[in-house]
Length: 282
Image (cartoon, rainbow, N blue to C red):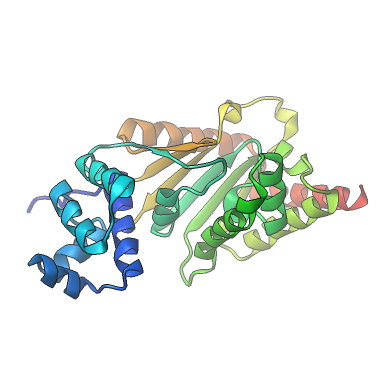
């Protein structure tokens, strides 16, 4: 029996967007299927990435959902590329959350995040998020919605079966004060609370290393039960999703290298607690 074709990031992201559009229109799969002369299971498979999505099918769905103009054109073009590996996602403004990342994070069984500059988004406190977005010049009118979107991603850590989360951060991240020393102390204690729940592992790369191979940028590696692994590289106004086997192997090896250089989880937690106390005294 042939092995089922695994969906790409583009296909999974497009399916998720189509599901949201249908739900926002308050339409059932059965109703939409009747309008188009399809089986309801076809729509379900398209939305979950279990079936390829043709641009003609997307165009038909968008008629039912009342989507026109630039949004329609963007989604139809995504359907035309739904079999392509890799995806460069343009985000509308600085620090906006990646819709594709938010969707696939919920499906992950393990998430590995390396950060040389800031606290990883999945363990940021609201005060830290707000302080970071302020120094990154996010407009005041966009602040509340951006903070809410960032914190909403963290819901996956409190699921009944949360993904395994591995955090690798540079000690510099823990020492850079955003907002105030008290804010940083609370942020570091929050990380320790997340680690204590048991599904999260923390490794800190000490400043005594002076340098390491991760200094050229952050990355996120996501593993899934049924789908191919994905690497996500974040930037100010865009995000790059990598799916090629060679890319996955490279970042998995990079993870192993950084973890070997880092302090053990126990020593990492001790260092975080020590730095939190230092911030409290500042």
